[in-house]
Amino acid sequence: DAGVTQSPTHLIKTRGQQVTLRCSPKSGHDTVSWYQQALGQGPQFIFQYYEEEERQRGNFPDRFSGHQFPNYSSELNVNALLLGDSALYLCASSLGLAGGPYEQYFGPGTRLTVT
Amino acid sequence: DAKTTQPNSMESNEEEPVHLPCNHSTISGTDYIHWYRQLPSQGPEYVIHGLTSNVNNRMASLAIAEDRKSSTLILHRATLRDAAVYYCIRYYPAGKDMRFGAGTRLTVKP
Image (tube, rainbow over all chains, first blue to last red; front, top):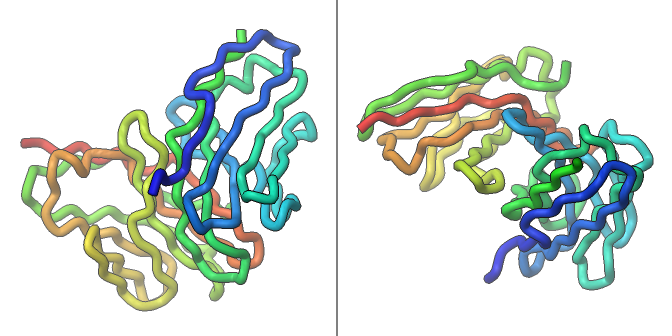
């Protein structure tokens, strides 16, 4: 089992550009959540996808958008990049939205640097 | 505030038990308590979770206060590999999201 995989590992972009990050969930998982982790802080919830729809969203602007594909993989898109978007972006997968406290499995993250 | 309160840092000696405290005084009756840890240069890793009763697994034990306003993660014998940032999180079944705080940085001394 490969676990949660993310690509790319590192990325450098210029302010104003757009970026797409990718995530493949753990085998058997159908729910993907995205988090932003600034240096020295805990992860902050961006949004969660289930059945190809955004189900929950944290306090992030519309510049942050996502997509989930039929194979449960997911993309995170960020438009009009700001310097403050520099962070580690984490993808986590879990099973279902049936209300249970399902544990989430995190990927290693994508380190985004905006210059 | 929906987040929990934890000490910024703690130290432990190798092979000794470690008790990591967490305050969640505004927790509601349906919120679960989750613990995750994050080793350097890795994503967070699930440790344990509970609702009302104490819980044990191969990694740790979780002791939840009777009034549920606080909990303690117990590592029975700390190893150098347990050095990490430990996050105590309230999980909202309705919202399906987890809200991380700054966590506790655990240092394990040989």
